[in-house]
Image 1: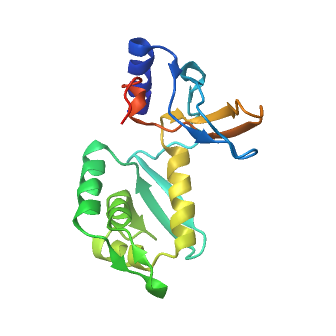
Image 2: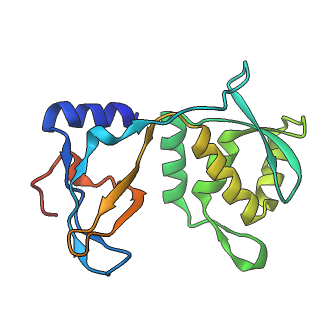
Length: 179
């Protein structure tokens, strides 16, 4: 979906994108970068799903093998609605667990240690340590197709070069808007 959005933006409004003010990590000054959208590349996929469209992953702390699938647009709408209805439940040590993250995992994780029972999977999700959650989300991003938003920025104040993700703001399609 992001590839289609970026292509539509490039063909409709050109290659230059001004996402708004950013802060240089070196000098701390605010500046407005100009991003060349033609430099954003498609992600190189090295891991492919199995015949069911599922990926294997070992949760590093729990040492549980899971199978998961990537989300689709319908799933993302469902997660968005779940995120808006409640602030979440309390997890271990009193931390609030985002209902959106919980719903994401319920939709994504299809199997745990060969067990495809949704109640069993939900219990695992509720007990998942934050480290497992973080590593799983990173791996899920890694195998997801799309655009690589990593970009080399140059501060106009001090000339410092640094890498970061291109922020997607309303200015992508409304470059002159000042909201």
